[in-house]
Image (cartoon, helix red, strand yellow):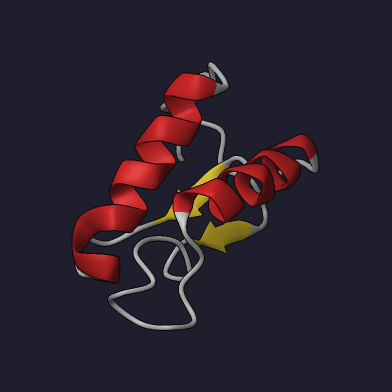
Length: 74
């Protein structure tokens, strides 16, 4: 982004599908989301889109756990 030095991947992974299936039946729970996020990161995706309205904030929590558990640089 500009001269900030921040690197943004060309592809951004939307995380609306990760969270609590009780919110929506098509949502993937954490146990299924973490391997998908890791695969995406290993494939070159380093930018993720979340919003506090996705699964009532659970997608943000899952992404945070992914970053911490896999020691992903931020």
